[in-house]
Length: 540
Image (cartoon, rainbow, N blue to C red; front, side):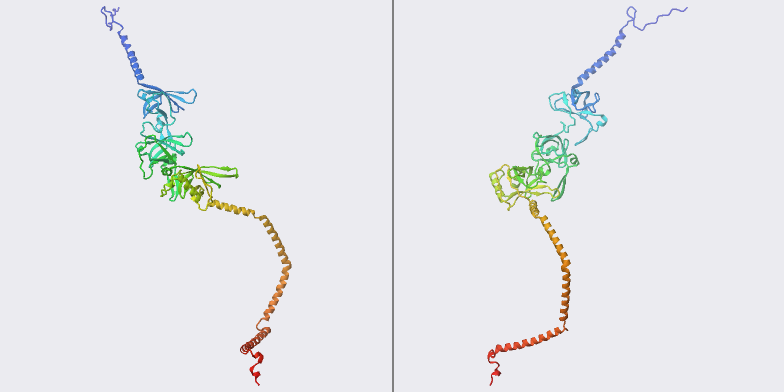
């Protein structure tokens, strides 16, 4: 038989009565989840305290955006992330819920701008190439406003100018936008110094407004004397120097651009303050032209064709450009039942006045200037259409003095003043040719042709009659004449009897004449012999 087993000693501590103590080991086990809960609570508190404001951004589409992945970056630093993307109720746009960080709470202000950064090719170059690998993200332009905002309308294209860029903004007013667009470059002495960040049409529709930004430090070259003009494409000009080609850069040729500079020989003047307004000229020549002074509206009426004359065509006085054509119309005179072509002009008399050395030329829009124009018209001041380019047929209006011009009625007090016109040499030649043609049309060529045809028929009959009747008789007559001439030739030969007899007769006639000459001499000396006879006969 086996001996009874001995009790195994317990590892639990015994109490005072000798029994083991229980319960303290389970309390240590429950400390682990408690610590984990505390850590999670701390993380939640930290997450809540580090979380910034929640905002909503509206875009037209959510291309390239994913909840939980797309980041919001400012200067390539993450300041938030996209939490959700929902479609609007009217399905016209998408709403992007963005959670900003605590450090980015200053971005939730009124003038902050958001846009989606994607690969783009624009007038200012290629941007967003890095997103080809990392994916699209939302870019931010920090606002400066103190008013908070949580709902934003995102930009569909990146803004060309951000708030942190240093420089000055200016406003330009022009007649046409030309080929420029947002992002088009700005040049100063052919150096790119800024870009266009906004374009709009004027409220009255008569022009355009262009917002430009000149980066620092180049903004110090924009002064009150600066002139702005379109530097788009290639400007080809044909003048006395030959072909002149002017352009700024390849970018300006492709996408257009603007340029500014002070006139030659002038300083830039005082620095132009931010948001200053300037006139935008069509080209550099127009921009550098001296101030035009007072503008005078005028009208010229032409009766000939205006083909080749366009709005903007120059008006000059012996080579000095005084203005340009602003409108070409058609007017009907019910009394004479004829049409005239009124051409409206903008003239700048100061352009001519500044070139006159004599200071006696009066100021425009004065009584003296009206009297001067009245006297010039009386002396033959007229407007005339002339050809400015033989290749293209473009016309311009020339003001000149024509002393032999017919007198006209003229009122210098009209507004606009109506200046008389005169046809040019080519038109006068055309009128003369037309007059000659009109006279030629009055000649009865058909009747003349009929008469000539009848005359030709009669002549044909006459020639036939001559051939049948007259010609045989003429041949007989010619034969008889030939015989007569032959007989005369035989008679007139030196050896012929007639020739010998004539010779003897002439000799006798010569002797007779000699005797008569002697008798005449004797009678002249002795006229009494006709009564008395010879003296020898009177002797006893």
